[in-house]
Image (cartoon, rainbow, N blue to C red; front, side, top):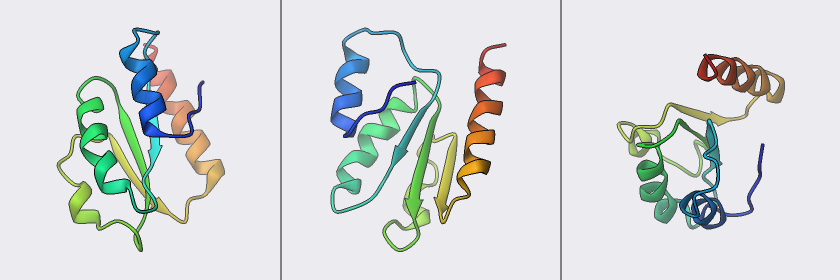
Length: 94
């Protein structure tokens, strides 16, 4: 597992040819989420992308049909999120 401060950091490492992650989980928040949306959509063509967002920040309709495997809205139960991620990683390893 790897964590990045920004989507640009993650995208740069993905382009560098390092081993690809099995899943990318990105949080859309703040003022720059719209600029990151297209980049996440492009990444979703290569690997499963889960988007975490807040209904108060992001309109759900904007996220639909973008190719994301999952769109999850806060508030989130972190235990449930971890269980879902673990289950999906097992599925991807088969």
